[in-house]
Length: 200
Image (tube, rainbow, N blue to C red; front, side):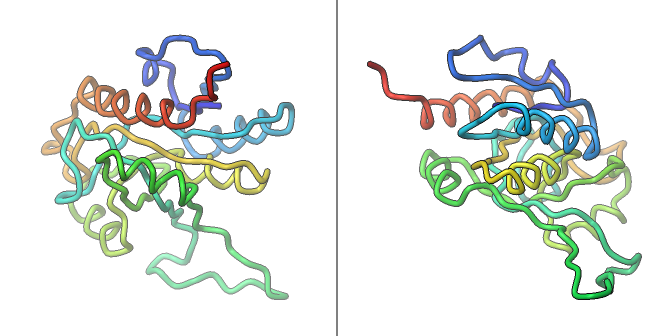
């Protein structure tokens, strides 16, 4: 299954046997709900989260295709302190793409970066610096939700993104949807070639 937020992100993708596309809607709640529902109703060997994303300055260029190796969600106290929960309960705020599959994509020449999932698009350099201080290199709105849903279901997953903009001051973001989709097409095509079932 390939999950994307909006259908236009995967408009380039021709129908393929054994590949199902799920358009989740925008944001982590929609992504988590839709992917979890799909995983509860059908069996999948692999979940791919695919879409455009912003890159923090210095980590990727607009038009690049990248694999997001690790994804975080800001689920803490304002200021960065961890939430203290009773009875040893755990906050789940990290999810990862499958390591072996990520390594294979990197071997094809694509960069592996760390992501942060947000529910509000960053529009200031101040917020971009705060996210960078947390270790974020790529910003999306669905990555953590999809990877975590697959993790809970015990299904292998990976996140790939095409870089469409610079994260920071919106006036300087250089937003380019077409370039982002082109980067996504390159990395997703390479990934699908890697995981394609053998021909009879």
